[in-house]
Amino acid sequence: MVPAPAQRTATAIAHPLHTAVLVVAMFFWTLSGRITAGRMRASATPHVIPLYITSILFEWAVLAFIIWGVRRHGGSLEAVLGPSWTSARRFFKDLGIAVAFWFVSGLLLVAFSRLLRADTGAQVQFLLPRTSVEVAVWILVAITAGICEEALFRGYLQRQFIAFTHSVPLGLILSAVVFGAGHAYQGLRSATLIGIYGLMFGLLAERRKSVRPGMMAHAWQDTLSGIALRFRQ
Image 1 (cartoon, rainbow, N blue to C red):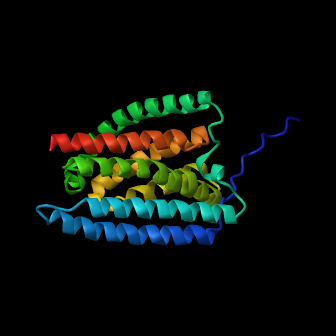
Image 2: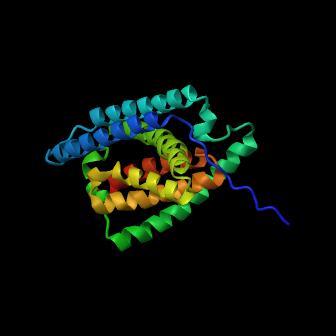
Image 3: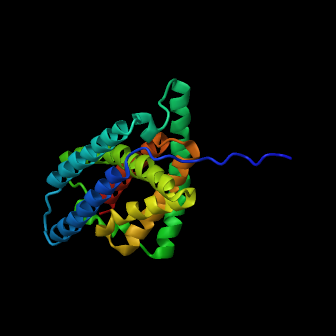
């Protein structure tokens, strides 16, 4: 009799209370973002640099909190990010995957945006950089988002949700929903589109068992989209 293949069991990388605190903090951050977005849309000349800096500080603080919780649970940074680059070959392989993912996901995102009739550019006009200084700080925001948001949503929350629900598909969906909800200030259609985009990143992270390719693709996408929308404006 042939034994059944062993089923992969996912284990939590941090205490459930740590995850609950993080989700509550994200809820209040999202609520604050909606209020701030409303005020900035009403302003003829919104001051974006204070918002950029606040976002950078908050996201790095969240990443520090994640690392603290994971290490307190007996884990390491690799538990969140995936295996480190031990050679140039591994780095360039992830870089190639990031470029391919960015291209394919971008095409899918255009298709979904047309299907949902979601214009994310119109929803974030007030956030776009206008001066050279704002562009420079925007790039820092994009790099921060690529690193911290992938670590948060795909490296941490996705793994936690998979462990809590004992289901990989459900864990991916829950992480994508939270990711989309975190961008609720852009409106329902745009948040739904971003949630779908998050699901693509989740599939990549689950396939690679690493968020490092997603970090590179995410940072590049945010940098390019912000600058491109600025010139379109």
